[in-house]
Picture 1 (cartoon, rainbow, N blue to C red):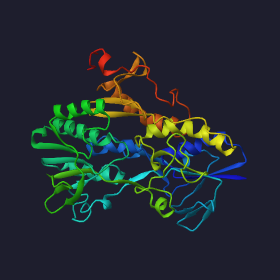
Picture 2 (cartoon, helix red, strand yellow):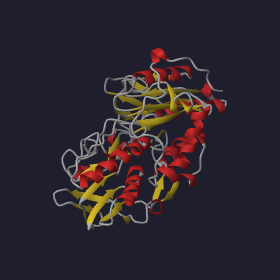
Picture 3 (cartoon, helix red, strand yellow):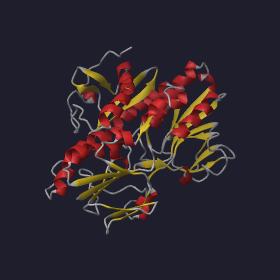
Picture 4 (cartoon, one colour):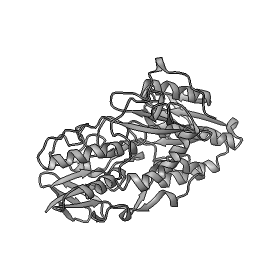
Amino acid sequence: MRRLVVLGAGTAGTMVANTLARRLSDEWIITVVEPSDVHHYQPGYLRLPFGAGSLKSLSKSTRQLLHERVGTVRAAVDMVLPDEKVVVTQDAERLAYNVLVIATGVEPRPDQTPGMLDGGEWRRSIHEFFTLDGAVALRAALADFPGGRVVVHIVDMPIKCPVAPLEFAFLADDWFQRRGMRGDVELVYVTPLSDAFTKPIAAQLLGRMLDDRGIALQADFVVERVDCEHKTLVSYDGREVPFDLLVTVPLNMGAEYVARSGLGDDLNLVPVDRNTFLSTTFDDIFAIGDASDIPTSKAGSVAHFSVEVFVDNLLDHIEGRPMTRAFDGHANCFIEAGDAKALLIDFNYETEPLPGRYPLPRLGPFHLLEATRVNHWGKLAFRWIYWHVLLPGRRIPLPSAMSMAGKQTVATREPERSEV
């Protein structure tokens, strides 16, 4: 028998295991190593601080989401021994593999920013929403917030869902407006980027959206420390940003076992070929999803678009054939804009987000780089698709590679009537 071991049962790991369970021959034993018995729908964390969504709707049994052919080991990983082709769990169980897929993602690490955890303000005036506990704690903090300065902050890139901090800022503006207290709240968006986003066309639009909502932008802000005594962010260039409520996105890092195993970079991300996800060091190790160092968004859409390419390549690789398919970095993201509207961006390694319609030219139904209610409903509908289509590894009739169909260059774009 041959053994495929998948580390992590998050979005990418679950999709990979379920897809391969239907495509690998019976000579393969598939095992997923995952310490948690609960799988969370992480995009839903964004709405929890504003009182939307239920905790029950955001979680399901990890085991029940996996194909019956997939075995599970309920344990955390201690180390990978690549020269021995063995995974060692923290329970000292040794799992041999012929092929290893690392899909343990990234996690927020507030301990990596001096002062963030040291002054007693964590989960009091300093919050994050990238974990379930953090989103719930922030919901309570917002409910009791009397007014003052709210700072939305990113420590460094890359992060899971790079548009999520912008979404939080837009939703916060909308939430305070609806509560009749926007005039009592100063909103500030602090980023290490030189603009509101990484891609020029989208950055220009998103920057205007911040301006229109009266959200101040502090760009090129690389935080050196958090001064909890004075409730201030301090940058390496000496700038200071005071806050009454800090909503931060801590440094995102891969799992510690990646470092212990000598498989990662400074952020514990696994260096891989950006087209095939094969480790640049070991010919029997792949990393997919957020765990890899590919230069695109760490988002669920990337996991979805990449798995189809990855599985076909893996099947060729294990049979000694060349891997002929190449992932192009395709990603798309809905961006909540407030007032029950959202934008959609679609891009890849080479092409930045452009205006137009998606997935069908003219028909859409989704608008690219335009805030519409249809986009908002699409984002809400994605939760059902996530549980019932993506995680089971079923095909969605969308190409894994980015298409230029329906997209327009800025110079040739025809004006469209905004949806109301």
